[in-house]
Length: 76
Image (cartoon, rainbow, N blue to C red; front, side, top):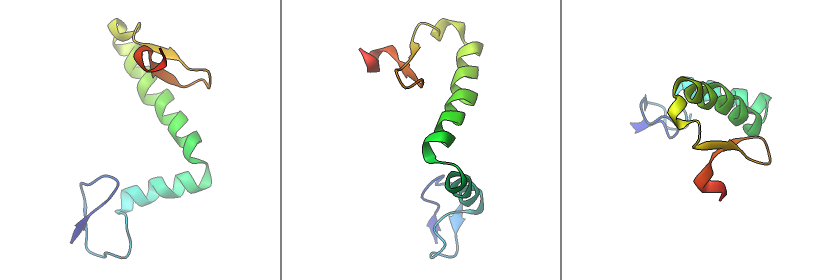
C-alpha cells in the first residue's frame, strides 16, 4: 500500500491509479481549467480571507506585478 502523493493522508490499494479519489477530483478540475487559474482561485479564497481575519498581518503581504499576493520579503 502506498500513500497518495498529493495529500499523503489516504492509502492507495491500487498502485496504478496514482491519486486518492479526492485528489483525483482536484486533478480533474485542473485539467478543465489551468493549474495557474486553480492556484489563483485558491489564493484569492484562502489567503485573502486569512488576511481579512488577521489585520495585524496586513502589512506583510502585497500584490505582485502579476496580481498574486506575496510576502514583502519575497519581493524585496
